[in-house]
Image (cartoon, rainbow, N blue to C red; front, side):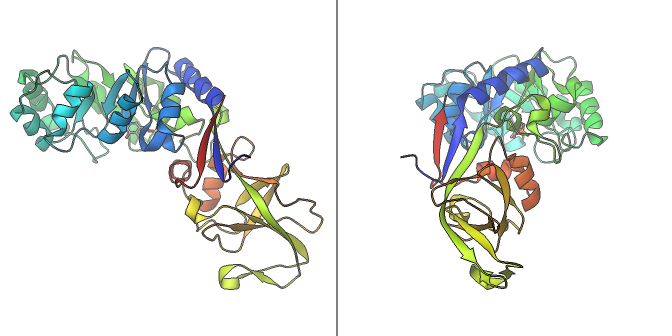
Length: 359
Ligand SMILES: *Cc1c(COP(=O)(O)O)cnc(C)c1O
């Protein structure tokens, strides 16, 4: 018996997406971003499927340690760096690279004594103004790292795009210019592009690309789909119909009773809700895929269930699959209905959803 709800992850799609990214960025190494539990796909699952990647990008030390515990030997990079002095020892012990983006990290590094130097990615703020040293600070910080015996040479450089998911936004060209201008002569490797950069701005690919969402088969751009770039969605979120009910015109359904049927119909109850990570604010009309067609969510999503309008002539039965998103129903589409981005939908699934890896 397969559990439900479950997120079925296609190993084949993950591997295919990695090779597709190689075609898209043929001159660059790939730092596969697997933070947030591999974007909800299962950290170790995806790391194993991405065994051909040149390295992995993570947001938390715990994520990197989980990969090492799972036997992953590849290059690991903490994209926000370390947060405490004591973490530096752990980075050395487990051979994990760190980003350095602020003065506090830099001072901690300078004041530490380490048995081995660590590999550092200096983060430049090229315009996003979230993390990183300003262009004015850049040369001075670079020189301090050069002089720091705790830092392995050469020093690598990174920055991050603010608007690369908007193909017409001039901000991206501006960031590219700042980044390239300041870092042209450095000895180390350079990285700027996330998924959107890699797909839409080939000149941003440099030595390494850092795709996350694209590797899971999803487009970073609202209104676009992964399949338009030869990518295949790796996750299918599946639950089941646990009730099919005759419903009379004018009758309400669910908490708040605010939806009323316009005509006699059949309603389906699907075993998934906000307790599984399906958003409570999904409005009427958000699509669910049942028996080869889209049916609309109606009424309020509750903790363990949601209701759909199957239509008067429906022949659906209790136990039939209900697909919340996947190959047949792109998560990008569902996200647009809900007013969020696909990133949030896939990463927010709760532990009640069983993640199963299929070949
Ligand atoms: C999350 C993240 C990425 C990957 O972003 P996608 O849009 O998922 O490709 C790349 N770089 C950094 C610094 C990140 O934090």
